[in-house]
Image (tube, rainbow over all chains, first blue to last red; front, side):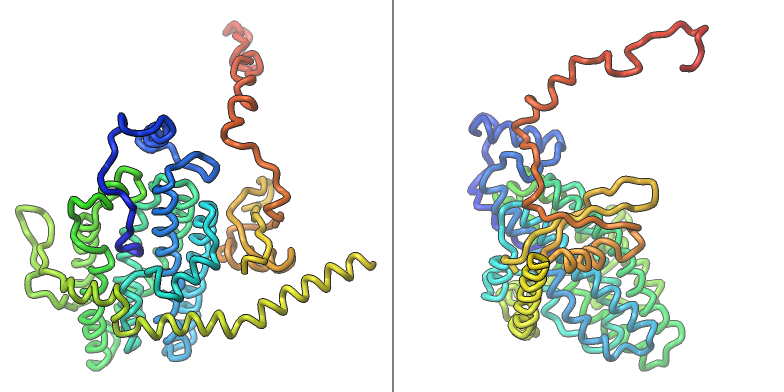
Length: 330
Length: 93
């Protein structure tokens, strides 16, 4: 999941009877699957939580460009380079769709980006891992975008209209990402040297657990998850989504002829699902707190891009101003 | 970027269809808004024509005006063709 821990401010769930008339009308609309639109009344908690969730999601798309950007100049062929650039451009687009959706809630994009740069806003833990070999581009597309799709497909039905519409657009484009990733790995496994095949397994070994962590911690009875579910800004639990992802991914992994770095992974005939081992949650919380292998580097790169691009933005404004004056004079 | 104006983007997906609202972009002027809209909303042949309109020039009805604006048309069923029943012998009209 691109938004892993979202604070809702709720201590416990209110019953319909305890709600104000406005709040009750709102909740009944959500229950009836009527989309909430920007001009509709909404509880302050709903608005704030959505700003947090959507900005976290947008930041993830934007920071997600960095591990891939690392390979643009190193891609093995021109075809691979073009595909990678198209994918990175999509991620930028996804970030922008999401920032736009967030702005309809009255949030300011610059302020939210500033929060990211100050370390006050989160983005997905997955992007704090380095991309060390070319197979990582395949594994990122296949596993990371694959995990994102599982999460985003259910978010197409989220209660907030602009967020839901952004998800529909994003999902359409993500399947290209996952396929291009899988194809990179497939080509390496089919036509690669032993060394290249070893790279694929190495990439999977490193990215497997971080990909599973994307869905966030185990579901608990916390008021946050209950509230997000009641507001329908979360539609399925973290564990449900993680299981869906594993069940659909293992056959693809086997087709590649690779293995997952999990000795407890096995098919469970009774449940009809794969059983799998426990995630290292200490690592998850460490990365989320800013102590992953690449957290500092990612934020510094983002800041540098903003700072060093300042003159371009200033020039654009000056140019627009000049054109306006000229048009007036003419 | 906050000082940049917000533009709403409308795309005509193919000839013969209406322009449809697809989202918004920030830009320093209309020309940049057009370029940004092209990059953001038509990367995969989604359109044959784009409009960009400064968001602050759009006048929109508020949702609490819904009744005032739209209720009056609800009791005018005679505005629909289905209101007029014709004998079967007349055939398709």
